[in-house]
Length: 219
Image (cartoon, rainbow, N blue to C red; front, side, top):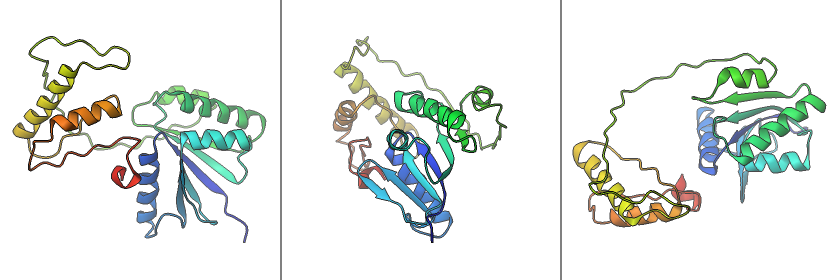
């Protein structure tokens, strides 16, 4: 049999690509690599008859550079399209040009929870907008500035005092609330240093998740 034509879903990060593929495969009662597979840097789990392939934006951009017509692909979904970075913008422009000049039948889908839907609709030739309402949860904003002034981040350097304060805020959140704490930091170094400052939390697992971590840790 000839290979099936595919839907390609582009995710901005490897962890998201793997997670999306595994979730879709699970919903179908399968393992990744059957009808749903994924390709990220250094790892490819895609069967010959896969109908959906989840890739990172960088992988899709490289594929477009090798094969501008995206042979065998019927639909491209750009997930998290509100995330503006070089690969994503270049890929979107590339796909728009491919559809205008080489593949007018290629279907493009831009998906996001927060993007300018009307703007993307115009960009894609007055494409229809499909809304999928989700569940909203109450959010309480707690302002927790440092007790003493700290230097703002400058270039690639973050004041160690600011990282110490971040760790103290995490400790406070754990003490005042049940459940887990998700802490966003700008880079691997900051993640490592804040995790080190939280090392004395005996009954709490401190997990460092970033792009350099092994796939097993990320997943």
